[in-house]
Image (cartoon, helix red, strand yellow):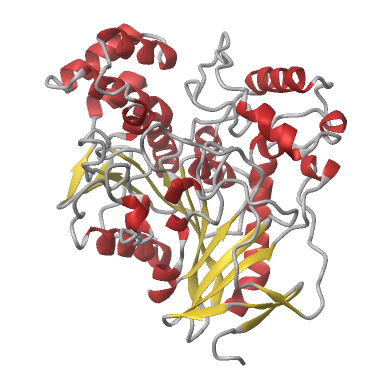
Length: 495
């Protein structure tokens, strides 16, 4: 075996990776056939076998997507470089300890990006720290935007989720060759990726493919109803000038689908019976008439250990980089409440009482953060804790970045560099960096990363389980503090 280029044989063919610092990385390994033409709107299919050894030393293409910017903050470590073109993008990256002892815990990560952006090329998702610490880490690309999530007659729903399940099947079949234990798989994801993880938890066909799940700033109530999704489909069909069905969409090139997806913002998805779970931020999510939290409450995912959590100030990312945090007024707080709650006045009153010193920006962010992530995360944790033989654990990531003059705080995405132990990435610092000026506490990444690994190994991240009585939650900050029922007043206002 070449010292610098280890070769592993998968079920479809051999791949040549690259060694660095005691770990081996294998990039751009296909887990499904390229989604071309009508195949973009079909379930994932097996990839054709290849002869010889496929090069797995360089990053590959990503799902079609438009460039994402969030005002004045540099989100490139999170979104990656945008659309890297190429057909064969339903791929995984695998990092593994070089020694390759076998039987190691496996962690499979689903990236976020509003279901329209992101890829395995994002610098944040380098898995070498996991491999260094004895875990086989897998990242994956999945279909995004119209190809991944538009609900179309003649096409299966939630194709991006079906891709994730196909990647889990690939892991089951192949990960032993990389030193991983196919029966000790933890599926984890963040933001839209975490909502997908909740959806996979509630997918009967995925049962048995993973043993544990981590939902980082997702929502067990984040799916659109078919009625809501049909509005998005109608708008997309109109923008493209075609009939709203899979056959018509299959004729349209990716460039035009990406362009149309980018123009779909701002559709009012509120119906007589349902609010918009994404409060207008993205027209794409899972499409399910039963929310994942309700499916879990009915017993799905009961054999999977679950770790679920949010950051303390999720909403700041949607306000501060656009200059909307400091300029927030009382009416903005009211508008955020009206978008997400049947009794907005009572909701605002509860938040004001619970946070007497909060600015309008803080209140607006808190309402948005709960509407997007908090309420749906607690619903998932409660459902799992009440109906599962497996353990439930909860966390809240509370460390405040001083980015954007302290307005980023403990915002959405803030836990990721700590989970991946990637706080040394230079682009996370400086005036536009997520971590801002100065250094985070030296051991915060070490401890956070270790808790995630401990959960993947044992089902216990190192603190008390969550139940529907105490709701024990670890608050992760410079100090780690276990608290019971954090934000209880706010929580009750949503029930």
